[in-house]
Image 1 (tube, one colour):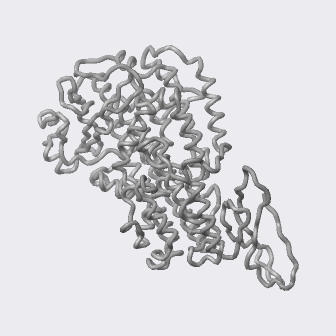
Image 2 (cartoon, helix red, strand yellow; image 1 turned 45 degrees about the vertical axis):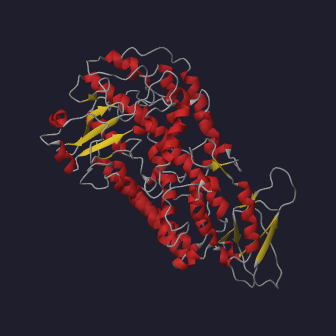
Image 3 (tube, one colour; image 1 turned 90 degrees about the vertical axis):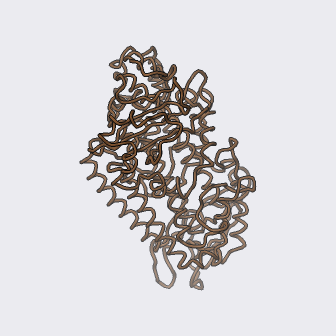
Length: 607
């Protein structure tokens, strides 16, 4: 709702302060002031359309709004008492809690639900659920499986990844779980490979030289060891080796499905019978899918970022410039996590019916990873790539996720750098900002002591001592909420839709020997038809790009300061350049990778 205040008092040379208030009590005591637009100054001096940004959301009955309600650091605020009172109220409204023991903190009670945003997803789910009710019976052949696509469920970009080793390898670099493969510097004790076993598979290399030349890669899903699963379902804890061939294609060369060396836990090789090797790859991908669903997607975008949203509301005034740059990237997150995750994780829902680990196992994986996830490594793209040894194009020549995501990460980094330098001309200014320092202290304060308990937060002794530290933290948050989530989320339909490509759940037991298998064994291993349609329904909705605006085109505007808007416009221009570069790259790729194109990356975790 918009309203206009007119005055014709000739004695008012300038309006310094305006007080806004709301009468009444009850449920809807919070109220919004998005902006104040100045249309005319007296004495014939016009400033048509100049916008003054006000704090976005108030809980008290009355608030004074002045010229400085544009971004202002606390020490310069003319209404410091009011500012502190509002922030005290926000701390009562936004409280930390661990909804499940051991997982990252979330908000205790969601203050402002916005279910309307999620209404389209709910309706889409109802429509698709009605359409699949008759899809019963079991699969009869691989040809039968391929008939599942049509008007409601379109063909994914490729349905041969399960058969093709090159495409299976490429799933590590352009799939949904692109941040787990790492350079292999040593064969783990738990993996029963021998140099003689691998020699025919590594193009006249020796195992030692392949490691030295940085041509060997590994994924070790030991985190899945003894993980809870849906009753009657098995999930492996596999180790897989990949090798970069002379043609620079990276392919799997060995898969061991469990961690302990044993006669009934063989190392499977590409030279094994066709369907034996295919089943080994499918069971590996099933494990990878469980890690993707629990950690890469749910735990360390959705849940961990909700804690950061709570933290800025507890510690930063709505007038704080750093609140204004971060807030657009948290839009809808609490609502999505509260409403949607119940649909995904509730009894008899998605995770408990079509993902091997189920809800209990998913939370266990999130719990296990919380002691390993660091904001400045796993939560910071360049550091994560470097730590895994895959940052160089000499080591991994074709890594679509890395190459595209880094461009967007660097654009966000430059955007945040310019913005921070605008409001903090020096490290001294940062040091004197008690709100931002309180926020910093809250981030890695242990959970039992009332903090967020995040590992790897840049700073010294709970404080930001340099602008670069603040820039790094804010960049990681914005990247994770936008591009990081997009990479984990929007390719789900393309990966999961064909049941052999990336199975979320498998039936029976994994192969325990290398004897020959058949197509029938594969068909009997994938989950039943109706279950798979349920999976397709959810991942189709999750892969929908229609929720929210593209990165840089903010769903809710927080920034009005003309100098800051210049920085925003530059950010948007940088993203447009990245879009054009990715378009050009995709013309040369065998299978286009669109998911890090800023044109399809939302600002926030909005689905």
